[in-house]
Image (cartoon, rainbow over all chains, first blue to last red; front, side, top):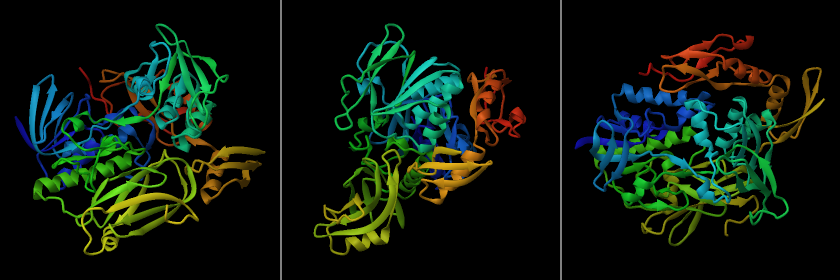
Length: 437
Length: 121
């Protein structure tokens, strides 16, 4: 059994940031465990730019962004194990892992940061009918093939889903000589950035069809084509009579990401069904004492800059836990996704021990224009609006952030309130709408 | 001449109509903030893009080395740039930031490595 102060699972952007932040906060005996053959995670295959605009105020590629943190982790002398898969975490923070050199490996840690990231939804997750030929792959898999391994997945491509990875791959495959015939989107809007729609599709005259999906897959050994159809905006069901066949040798799926929480479930962490990630507090502490989490394992982010910031909080909190052995204070608020909001992270706030100001991350349910974002605090006896922000546009594809201050929360709670029943709600309201639902 | 473009300044994605006369933007409509005009100027007079792609690499952990142009190049040269790079093969070790092709296609931009790859086996 090897003993460490802190074990970080996953050396992608989240794990790298958490490990570096914990080290900077005074924890020296740290182990970083990565299942791939190098550190950096998904950033290594994201060779396009757009990373670091907020964190570094520079426009970096994925590998360049990752390298800055890998350099730090190496300079700090943090132990890292590559090609190593963590199989289990126990409540007393013992990790069971496996790799070729050590075989089965037991690691005992005082605290753990979960930084496993997320994985792509596949054909099975969205239940596309049809045969099961080769050539139906996720956009991220194609990205790894094209950008790192040197394989082209096909020559004639249809892409289902207009998330950023799908858009980026439309451009990438076109530049590498494939014909990208179209991008289909089930919804009436794209969850991708406008910049990507312009620079990845319009620059190359690739059509983007909203309210469309794939209803059939053809081909025996290799995919030969798909049947596409328009869907009803309300029911999302294919409209009969709108089906048409499109030949292709590859179907790329860019249909969403799911936080990777097998280990979290095993150790019994409370999960939030809205995010598919662990329930966390303002310090990214999960429901099991000494286990923290950050990045896409908690909720899927759009920007790596936010993954870094969130995971630095997780790393610093883990360091504080190791060095001070502090228990959470009793005054506890729950956050709630109100009208028009699909989730809020963190789910729990300890108002007495929080930083002077914290950011609440959330997503809205649909596209809203000229609305107010409202943060209100409900106690057993009253509801008080503590913050209102006007927003010209809110889109589900862009994670939103609103800040709350410790003093305003404590003032709104007042004195003599019971520690239970405190709920902080974020809602989307029309400009002229009353605060009562 | 009128050009229809979508502003990429924010998720609003305002549809802009840009009037270009004698190589100058003389009018922009459809913009709802100052970003619209700035974007219209840049996009209609001399649209540029930073190109990110790969070149073949020998004796490295991977078959490919990721690269980028050191600054944005004219948009209409992207295709030529990527085709030009198909013939290029480098050898490990390579350090991120290293110049792979100097002044690519006389654009004034260098092609630089975005990843360090060590000699492998």
